[in-house]
Length: 318
Image (tube, rainbow, N blue to C red; front, side):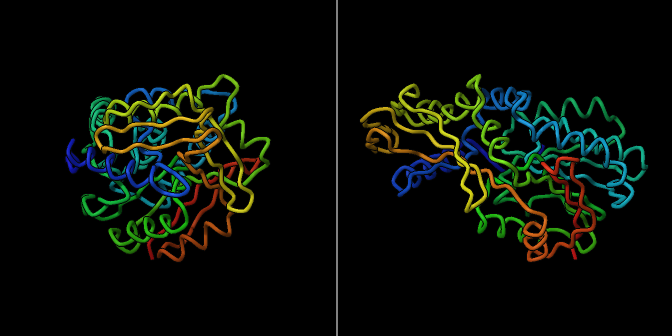
């Protein structure tokens, strides 16, 4: 594996994000800090919930259209951003291997442990492929992707929605800058739909998403010597119709003051005050097309399910 992150880098990033986020108005944290080992386990549990439609809907789309992706791109190298376990990506790998063009797979993820496990499993499953993991932050280190020709970059799971519009623009432009003309992006994006479907996907009655949301407080306690009481914060999931995104927040049940020892920082949380921990933007086809074209991509294929809940866009660098 190519290692572009180390413990010092991650520690500095966490310190900066927590200090900046908890002293901002409104308070907010980036969602990447959910994903320690426990957070990753909880998210895998979320993807199996009946209410959480994105994972199974995207998987069904990949099952239907992976062969078409292989035919259109004839990719020699598949790159996956935010790869995690790469389970859904096996559908693309199978299609590209069957098409006869694929020679290499490059998964990129911020978690070295998750990436190492995925690389080991995939190397056993696909002995004919060159598989090399890249431990990096996809919002900062795309320049470290191996060069080549006929690359297909997969960015799945609706993760693009965790970025606000300015961040999305910067990310897509950065990705375009490392691709050659004619190379490809396969983008999975969740679509705008009735809030009665959206909100339960982020606020399940079993409380799994609530535990996932509070996990960021456990991470800060462990890594920065904080004294958050996670039980003193309620999980909130709201649909913002103006921004067309879901917001996840943590709401203080009572007046409290949190000490973060590593930052020498005391943060008051009056009763009812909130900390935003994630946005998950939902898209319309025309808006997504506009954003891709502004970054230098031309959409070539658009696939969605029969309910128009989730989309796959195959776009070419032009």
